[in-house]
Length: 111
Image (cartoon, rainbow, N blue to C red; front, top):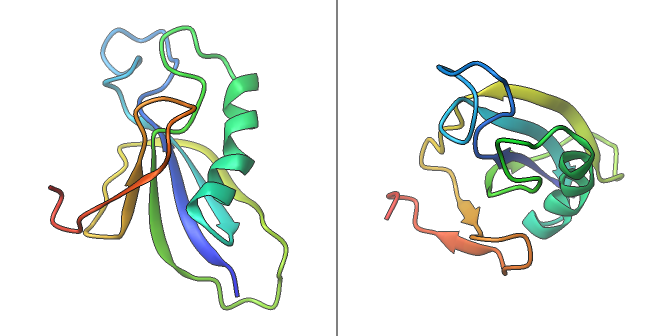
């Protein structure tokens, strides 16, 4: 069974001075994958092809949303990119500081 993840790039590449850049709403993707690393491997190539003058061209954070109970067993992008503020809602979360860094699980309390 595969899992559902929200893969997040901090910010967006909009030219708007109020809502663009690394502090603006995040660029998000809904992904079905076996692991956080597998979810990032689906999204990172997409982000690398997208405009990224004001933001990084790779994912920063991943939220586990739950198990995918559909009959499909193929890891894939289900939705995205969509731009909104990404909130963890106490879901298990993984972060990395740079594209080549190892994904590190963060506590559910946000610490």
